Image (cartoon, rainbow, N blue to C red):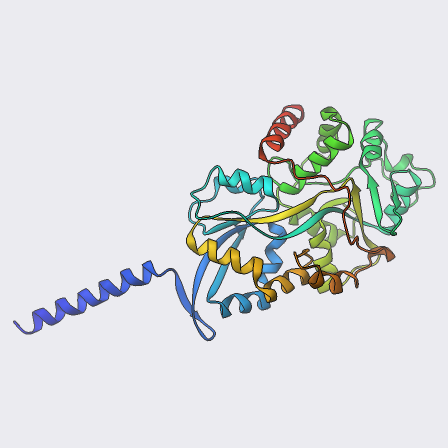
Length: 351
């Protein structure tokens, strides 16, 4: 027994040391070609397909990483940060708000971008043009005049009020279906655009949201409804351009599916907020690795290297209209303080 006792103690010590070492080295699991460290991420729902892509997973694994990505509205993220290695909202204002609530490990990292756009159909675009709410610009891109839209909504313009309308003969107000500004970056940024287009008329801005009734909380939900219904449930849906281009490239466009850009529009910078050192390392990899950036372009995101985006975007012509190459005159992200003030005032009018 005297010889057995020390041996048992030694075995127990080795087991405990091994367990502690494994915990300190991170959450590791066997991956192709070696161990990978699993990190958890809170992401905007518009990036779900990117992180679910087997090619993205393989590329991450080759660098020793596995990302478990949970979707959330960008403006819901600050209350859900504990336990995550990084948060990945759809804009810099949302990222700045997260920084005010989380325990941080590094600077914000912009990974790619995507402008706001409106998913619709060619028959609806024809009606919008007839109502003088939309038209093509010099490059042939469809633009939705937000000032004209707000003015029409104040007059309670309905689809049945548009002369010769046999496409959508319903007595519903003409407006864009969005998520909730309190929950989602896309709707918050749309409120910023409408505020600018109306010259700060918050009553007009609020009406464009309240007239919708009940809405979703993440940007993927209304877009999925648009794809399922062929636009019958909501003829115009606010999206990130990336969602539409991803669908066009990887699934193919359905009959009549097309894209209109708000005038003015805003280019959202999809930004990682690292919450742990693992988050710092994965953020840098996602932003700089050529393969991961190329895959991001394949999922519709605009990368810092336009050469990765151009070959993909040139092949997408929704409704025989090109995608914009530049966004001259785009509205700048207002920053956390200005956006927070605007949304607080808007919330009061919508309550």
